[in-house]
Image (cartoon, rainbow, N blue to C red; front, side):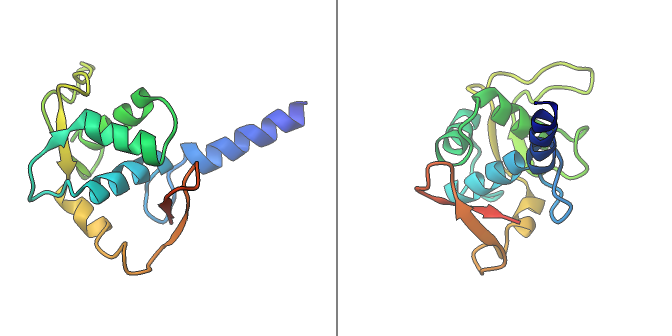
Length: 142
């Protein structure tokens, strides 16, 4: 039992909790950015409700709690959490003093300018895709 638990824990850590060295993203971050790209929420377009983006991520790629997805998206929009803003947030996305972000129904987001560079050649067969959780769509893997 102990070995099984340790094997499972290591699998989870390696596959979900650690960023991939090739792009620096965790799977949830990659899914958020890919969903935003598919929605067309680019830096030159208007912000979209965060709840819409989170809903797309949940429904298409990440069948876990909405809080986990929203919290990950919030961190991508905080200039004090990441070196480069991958998400351009509009509204209260928290503060360095520990204030939490507003609920997703009150905030809006779009891709950051640098994110377009990260995803620029995604449709040119530069990466592999795998089936999503219910095998109805494909999602990128590094």
